[in-house]
Length: 90
Image (cartoon, rainbow, N blue to C red; front, side, top):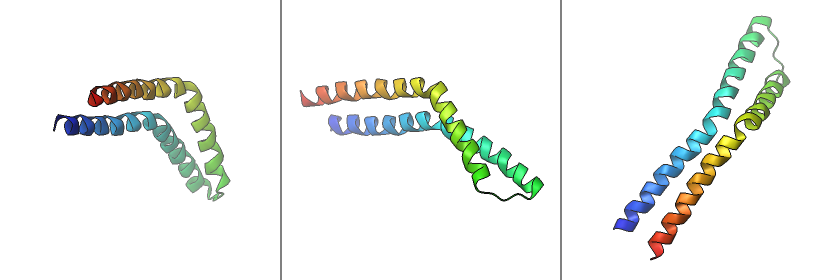
């Protein structure tokens, strides 16, 4: 039963790790989408590429700036998972 609790705890931590890794990109895209949407509503310009290009640029910028931290978070989680798997097998 202890192994089941360990696996459920790892699954819970996996979901939190994925959420923490995705939050910077999602929040940045949300902010850019909101600003571009307000500008489009104010100017009555409804061009789809006007929303895509800034969001793509912000996504790349956030990944360049915070990609290392996001990858470090995922790597730390992977180390812990591999250690837990080794302990379950014993």
